[in-house]
Image (cartoon, rainbow, N blue to C red):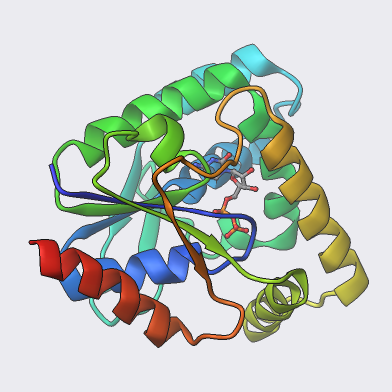
Length: 222
Ligand code: CDP
């Protein structure tokens, strides 16, 4: 299977990069963060306590999560049991609640199983935190995307503003720092650099330049 794994901290640009690289190569894009967000959103809607690991795990097992390619280069659509939840899973509130849900090892186990199944169909780009380390350690291409904290805060601020969310920049910065801390600290599937991953610092380069670098490497080898 031809698999490109892209990991990195909060708002480092991995999802946009993964989407555009996938489009350019004609590969599928599997946004694994969206899966954790779907479980969290559905748990919030059903008022399941985010500390109830058993019920969260059953929920993760039962959900039907699908991706629909947008074809216009915009954000792909995410369908949760047939319902388009693409926007609602990206609100600041769902983002904040996703960290504790993603900490639950049995929830991760369920989602990783699904992610591996999709990945092994081949010709795909996956983005997340543990793709190159846990989900598909055998991936041929692994990238670890980073950007300075200021740059990441700025990018997420613009994203929220364009979606009409009112955000306090200091609160946003604190949220990003806290999610990064949790992502690095968890016992299963923590964010860390895979030994053979290429670090891509996107602080001072455009999204298009990053896409070009990653896609060119893969294209050369294909
Ligand atoms: O775009 P952003 O970096 O804000 O988040 P995301 O990639 O959509 O992921 C949302 C949350 O899901 C993160 O805060 C992680 O805690 C969790 N996640 C994870 O634990 N493992 C993954 N493979 C992907 C996301």
